[in-house]
Amino acid sequence: MSARFGLRSAQQASRQSSTGTGFTFRSRNPIFRRYQGTASNPAAETVVPPQQSLFQRLWTSEVGIKTVHFWAPVMKWGVVIAGASDFLRPAEKLSLTQNLALMATGSIWTRWCFIIKPQNMLLAAVNFCLFLVGTTQVTRILLYQQSIKGTEGALKSMEQDVVSAAKDVEKKVEAKLS
Image 1 (cartoon, rainbow, N blue to C red):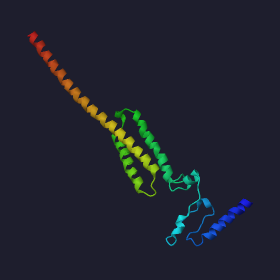
Image 2 (image 1 turned 90 degrees about the horizontal axis):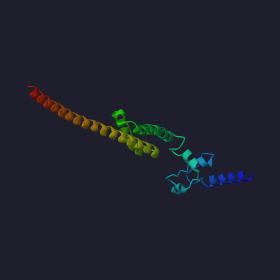
Image 3 (image 1 turned 180 degrees about the vertical axis):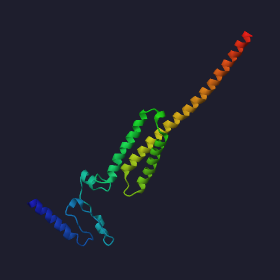
Image 4 (image 1 turned 90 degrees about the vertical axis):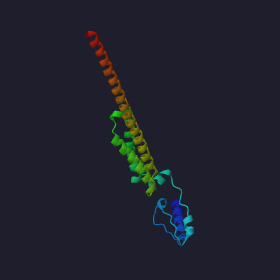
């Protein structure tokens, strides 16, 4: 009983001392109080909020656990993991347009994460990783396509060599028969 009485006394005393400071407490729960100063009383801005636990800070943050700013990046990691799992697939089975889209999406949204308010570093990190995955896959696809073109050129020159060698052998056989 004395602990409750002490807490109530402290709350009443803080309310009485804060009546002239330009801010009031509207919440009954002291953990979720917002301390706001006014331009008429800059001293009110120096009030230090009570120390919160890590969970309380995560819960009450603008980008905390109970907001879409937290859950959207968490779910987007699935897209990054799916793109990274394609590292094990051969390059000829990858889609260039799909990976270009991943690369573009990652770069555009990484930049956007620094413009929007509140800035969401978790979303910026997942989008940057998406950009890296897309860039890696696009590079693999382009290198594969270049090697195919190089191989086709080499095959054509080898084919021409074989055809010319066959014609030479054919001429020599005809010369011996005649």
